[in-house]
Image (tube, rainbow, N blue to C red; front, side, top):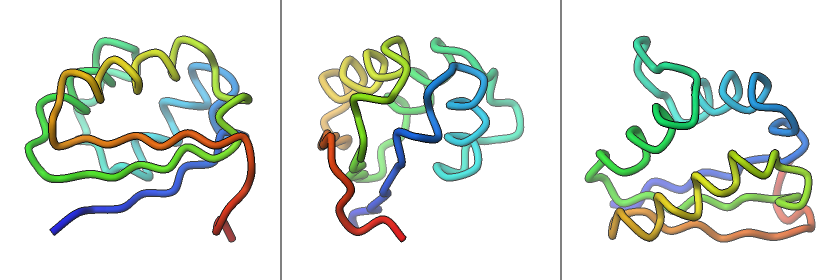
Length: 90
C-alpha cells in the first residue's frame, strides 16, 4: 500500500519551520534530529512506499527541497512530485 502525503511549501520556507512541519506530517520518530541529515535518513531508510506531493515547491527552502530530490533518487520506495501550484490541499 502506498502512503500518500500532500505537503504545503508555504509551511517549509525556513529550515526550522520545515522540520517542525515535516516531523508532524510525515510522522517522524521522536528522536528526529530536525536537520537535513536527519531528514535524508528518515526519507531513505523507510521501506514503505511513499508518494509525496510538494505543492508550492518554489516556496520550499532550497536546502530542504534538495534533500527531498536526493532522497528520492536514493530510495526506490519514495516518489516526489513537485508543483508550484495548489492542487487538492484544503
